[in-house]
Length: 143
Image (cartoon, rainbow, N blue to C red):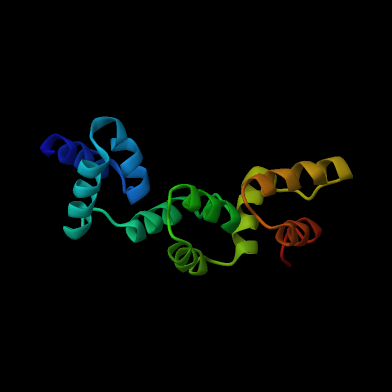
């Protein structure tokens, strides 16, 4: 059990993990009961927090991804929907973030339908909504 706890603490020392992520990483090293006991102990002591893990992820990735991608990734990490929405609501304007990413990658308005599709696919893969992409590519640079 002490070995399991120290393994969990080493993982948490590298970066924040959600409860589900940590449980998955510890699954090969202990029984379900031992893992649950260690996770509960870590939560009580404040070393494990889904809210903190979600916040750290959003802070680290919001500059590169849209809200849809952030939401999906947090869902796969086992974060509750309420916590996800708390984190995503506080983000800067989606169109401004998309414009910043688009400018770094392309910088010039699409000249034809093929280029427009390429730029739209890029932004879509980053998790930006279709309406944001259409608005950005229609008016790429603010006057």
